[in-house]
Image 1 (cartoon, rainbow, N blue to C red):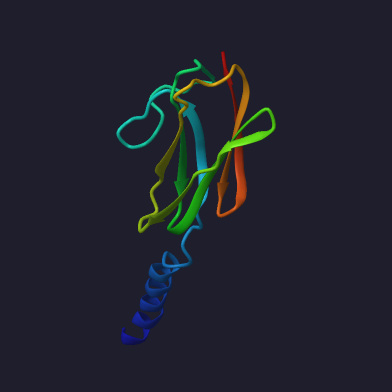
Image 2: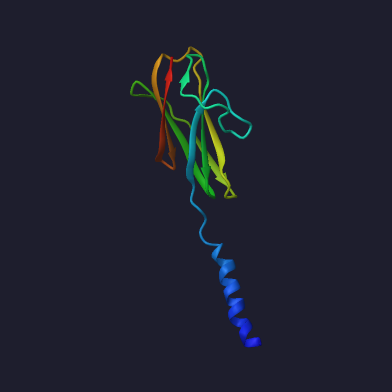
Length: 132
């Protein structure tokens, strides 16, 4: 009886330790634009068209565990108009949102804009939007 327990205990130990492998690396799950945020930093109602005096919110949902830098390069007519960065740190594997905003007291000129999101300096996606 005692000899039979060895392989059973070994298989239980291997199964338990297999879930303790390397952590899932940070990655971008979703990028959204809108006029307002929910309490958790996600976009309340996605939009791709804004007025000249709107605040433009961008939410980046990431998943994984560890530390990373999320940045957004806002451009208009081929020119960078802002490039904010945020350091994020998660000690859990669930997803979480990091929000950014673009504002102009004088109003935005009408036209096409882009917001390119970077995770640790690597492009993670582009969202195009319009100010009308």
